[in-house]
Length: 363
Image 1: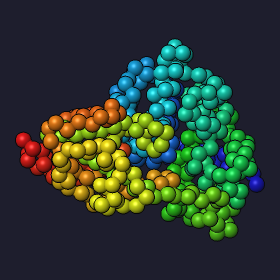
Image 2: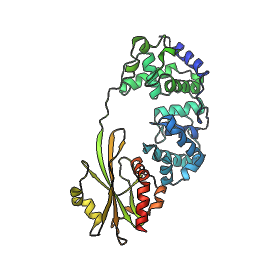
Image 3: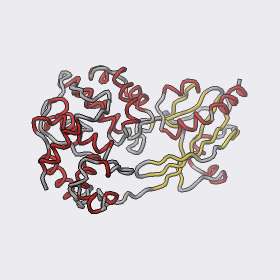
Image 4: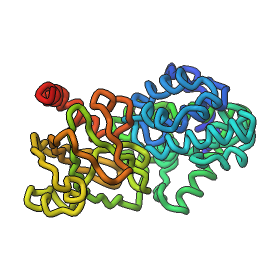
């Protein structure tokens, strides 16, 4: 198949497409890197507002490096995949402190940055410096697998090597930035995962998937994600206008985000089981308490896990105190300053009127 035809037609199409985005055409490697990290595992529609917020608050890599981690995590709140935010902050400090704020200018050096993989490195190298490195993301896998009729699984070692090699053969070396943007735009707007408009596609004549009726079957993935359900029982301990929270420091989901004291169980927790739980006994000690409200279960779907969380609003006397120093007592009105997992934010927003009423009762 004529590979030059594919590249020429794609570049020709790129001159006609109007897909404005704030990072499109950007040459500042810091802003390109910022946009690419935000867009990892994230739709453009969702990531756009986060990019604008980060760009405004941290216009340079030095600004991001100097920011407290909790502030960065709070700004990232709701975007998910929080390891990206931790790596973003770590790398900003590395560039600011060890590289004098200068972003690396070669693919190999860019790849050394924490949180930067082959796709992100190629994107930064081509968009910032027009270096001849092809990007291979989900859009590119889809376009190439369909057009060339490739049935090698994209999540296999063989598949990754095959698609990377093909992508670099197709790349217009002198127009790397334009070509890379074009193929990603084409995958995002024309050759989409579903609801493709193949009949109006300028590549349909030579597209193997269209000609063979395999558009819906490509690309192929060999591995199925095994999903686990976890049950979280959050204790919202009310002491007058204060509540207790803790930071998730362990290597697990939501690392470095905040949460209420947690009891994790194998299934939805019943009251009689709760009272026998060692964490419950350790927290409640011999204090009098009143379980004011038990929420209906909240659900959050992650890539590998389903989280089902129940919230117990518990009123405690003014002299209540927790022995362990990992817990922090905060005024309820200051909860908005902390970065919480989405499922806790959903609970707080959903119960804002009810919680306000409870605070009134405590006055």
